[in-house]
Length: 67
View 1 (cartoon, one colour):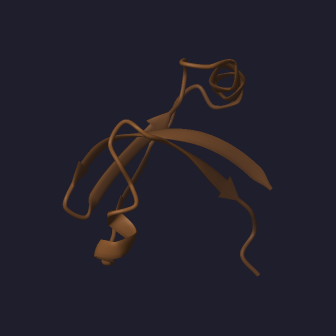
View 2 (cartoon, rainbow, N blue to C red):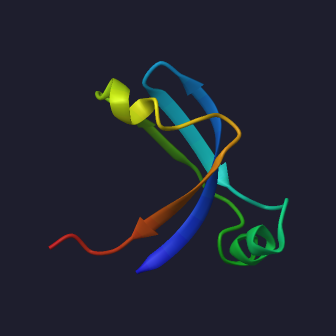
View 3 (cartoon, rainbow, N blue to C red):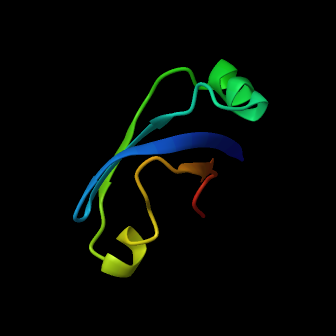
């Protein structure tokens, strides 16, 4: 499994955009060393799911193979 840490920097309705963290804590500096650039952009068809994401908040993103 690979764990990344991203910050939501844009949300309008179901459109959500995130980018890797780079500062704000020692943990963020460590994540920045492994993921200095990138983006996640998605559209949620679930209002309940989209409502859980807030602009300015940080989120862990876990990547592992789907079986």
